[in-house]
Image 1 (cartoon, helix red, strand yellow):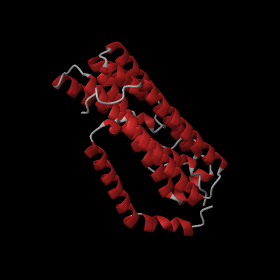
Image 2 (image 1 turned 135 degrees about the vertical axis):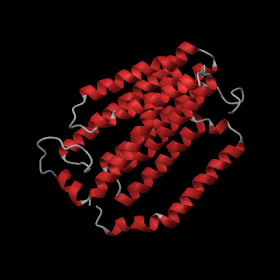
Image 3 (image 1 turned 60 degrees about the vertical axis):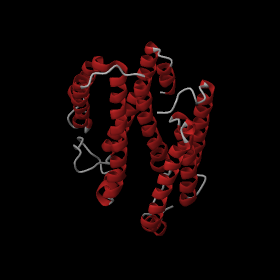
Length: 103
Length: 182
């Protein structure tokens, strides 16, 4: 467990992160209800926004920003490995949906 | 949850408990709203073969999808069920950390109320038994390994809660906001 004395104890920082999460969620909902983009682009945009929100939660709420560097590297390497595996095994089949008449 | 962890770190037991109870209230509200959404969808015709059939089902688009494209209902209910289960486990976890043995009768009362008040043609009449399993597991832990939960325990329970929230960050846009039609 990280040393509580080392990290920033500012409550204000957490409220800013919460505000940013709320704003990003609002953007996602707006994009979803307005159907601004076609499905593949919408998927990409929503995934990017979700990754940004996840990074904020992991870094601040789960305190990874204030942990030792090895903990951050472990997460980055594990998640990158997951995406590499998904790219080779999942995405070729997932691309089928583009030929199924999705509007 | 963050404010509860802060309170635990400054050894403020009262506010730790209050903030954890507030987090549990929001988690419970999420579960109840999600259960209502499930009930509404099942009544509209979107269902799985294992679910009890509500009376007077119409020949709706959802019922056609349930029979013609069974993967849709299976994926939706499977994904959201797993998330809802983990939120339920999280609420029970927070309840154990916040209230310890006092939480057991509350959990028992909630299970009993759910079992008696939810009609038997609703899938949650059966799924509420997850609370009974949680009650048994929590009782085993609280009686076999009694502990005065400190700031570290609150922080670890916070990590679990944020993980559940993290999963929702992906499920909500991909399931509810994509709204892709074929």
